[in-house]
Image (cartoon, rainbow, N blue to C red):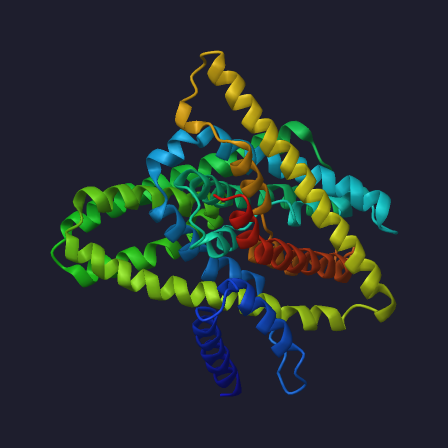
Length: 412
């Protein structure tokens, strides 16, 4: 009964704080994050440790599905070059950059552990990008690039993480095998998402007059799709994104208006609750992780985290501006680049600054194994978890709170 009481209290706090955010100029995700940290330090507050499996199953599928469902598919297709560059190439580049920094900066950090940390922090977060940029008046192009990147890059980061952890636990890394598995994981996720979308299209066609059945199926299938994909060891993230894109197309062409409206109402409530809970839970997790770190190391590792955030921003800045230059060069060379795919320097900076780490990085870090193959404790596990949540907090608060001011100054 005590657990249910805590859950209800957290839900009530989340709803109240979200309402309060509407009366202030602070973005709702940031206010929830700050409130979560402050509440977590209250002595009477019971510790609420996040179960990474629950985060990946309960939160990720519906949020990814909703973002994919609402994304503009023509814009997504137009900007696919940029989205692919950021979601795949930039993820591995960031992983390598963080690994090099961590290896030379942090005492005791081996190359495999450094790559584990790099993989954990390599991907930007779809929830953070959508939550913070909402209401800032950014262009559809910018929003599509940010959401599209965040929808796909989780899959790249999870693959990099899998290989890095395997290296720590004693499994040899073979480049061609890793490349082949990466293609299989992404391709398999795409195939499962496509098959389930086609099957769901047929089933919805049979029950299209029963609105509650149709809406219930739409609500259930992101979770089912994610579980099926993960069961076959392919990307559940990609599978859910493909399902969301397919259902968006199906909805526009086949769904009656009243079904669209009812479904949208259901999803609006679900996404509102999940979005709010995620940022509140990240804040609540920080005091728990903080207690597990020796006091003498806290400020040192907080400094390491700040340096990592600066490095990720620098790598992202260089890669985004390079992409802007490459697109303009390709367009002037009359290659197959649409003029709509081009973007200016202001957009490049907004895309750079909007790349925040979030709940996926935290869930991956908390899911680190406690032991390696020989039974010994996983090296520097607490330190890596602390660094991960510190980077997430610095990234979300630093970039999230300043983003509205930057958008205003750039007059976007």
